[in-house]
Image (cartoon, rainbow, N blue to C red):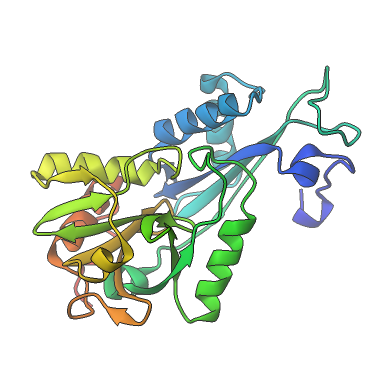
Length: 279
């Protein structure tokens, strides 16, 4: 079916209230990456807002596999999946006897090799989101506004903070490296527990790199040895500048590059799409 032929119910709680949850899942070489982590987080988010997922995990996974096959995906892509509380007359109270709505689509998405190799510039923005950011809900207006502010300032991401303490970014987790140790905000309700964040932690443990779940301030971040962000679409992307201040020499650091290489190997993309290949 053509995108122009798709339609959504007139009264839909996802549209009217942001009453739903979602996931963005990376696809490499025609295969989902970190699928278990994403599926498990989807169900955790749904449970946190008392939303019924219309399928058991195994059936949902099978349907998403079928979606890849239907679209003949063989390369680099992304999947977007959304579940809402359903269609019913607008009322703040949960509707009774209404089935949840779910839709998903997959589309090509190439890796941002330039950003991965050279790093990105960022700005800091006050974190005005709600207290349950661990839920991957549809309520993303503060994230959208922060990302737009970054874009208008020629930056690739907005680093969020609460009273000067860094939490995460508008659409990624953020890490600072001090003396060979990777620091990031604890996995509390104030941040999204990123699937790539979990993989970064696992890689650090495998490589003997201390992974410290301890928040840092903006001032400490400016003085970091290295800085990077992570998400399904950003992978492990170096940050070379914050608020027009360079991080050290303004180039991706060695620990970040080590994590990038390990990520590529784990995702199975180191042979044909490595950012470390010679030009």
